[in-house]
Every structure is written in structure tokens, then in C-alpha cells.
Image 1 (cartoon, rainbow, N blue to C red):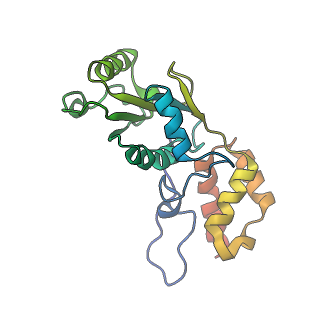
Image 2: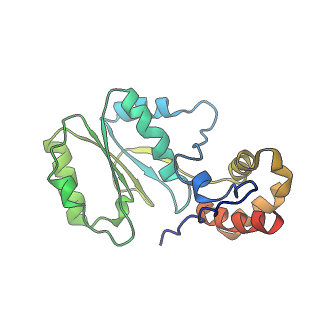
Length: 204
């Protein structure tokens, strides 16, 4: 089950908690690419793969954050996108998507593709092929599309993100605490934000 992100803080005179939703949701906290990689480079790879690709990784490893960085780069390459975010137990695509007049060349982006039933996947694949649409999905395991990216949260990456979030308050939470927290949650960054939200609040 996808855990919800930490709640936004109520208005207070002080600085808001840097681990609240407004700061850590996909798109708010930019995806950190390793040296030599970028969203533009991924779009080039996606083009070479016929505009079909999968982003694979466990819960809380940054798949949605990567999509938030990738979609604007796809637009810059001249391709429109249609983003569909699926939630736990959502086995079918919304009828609004299946019946929509989607322009040829559009890249259909499915976040949470593993939720779909085999029949819904089959229908989606047929829709994309008939209408000349691209397809990019996120999933916990390979679904047979060309691999675009594998997400993984290392301790080094978690520390870099925490440093960015804390800014000039970086001494509030030590690198060792970040490592321990990430290990407790088995690399799940979303759950790590939950715990660090409480840690920061207790020291505020």
C-alpha cells in the first residue's frame, strides 16, 4: 500500500517543516540525476525506444518524482503527454481515458501501472498501437516494456536530499540519522520522510 506523505503544517510563525507534503511531493523536490544523466538524455533514450519505456523500482524510490522531471522534457521534445495516476486496487483505466480523443504522437504516462489487470494492460497496449501513442509506465517490477530507468535510493542520495531540504539547518539531522532511518524503512524514501518529519518537529 502506498503510504500518504506527511501532512502539511498548519500556519505557524516559524519555518514550516521541510519534510511536509509541500516540500517532498513529486515535482516539489526535484529528482537528482547522477552525473552525466538528465531528463533530456532520458527523452533521447525514450525516442530511440519508439517512445515506449518502463521506470521500475520499489515503493518510495522516486518513480513519481522522476516522472515529474521527465514530462516537461517530453513536452520540450515536441510530444504532448497524458498522465494517469493509479492508486491501490485501481484495476482499470478510467473510462475518460479510454474514450478520450487522444492526438497521435501523445505519450500516455501511467504512474502505478502494476495496479492494472492483465486485460486492462492488453486494452491499453492496443489503444496505443492503433492510435500511434507512446507509452511510459512506472511499476515495481518489469512489465515487458523497454527499460528506461531503475530507481533506487542509496544512503548517499538520501543524505543529499535531506541536506537540500534542511538548507541552513542541516545540522538538525545528522547523516548517520538519515542512514539509520533509511535502513529502517528498507530504502523507502516516502516512509523516511514520515519519520524525519517527526524528528524535525521534535527538535523545532
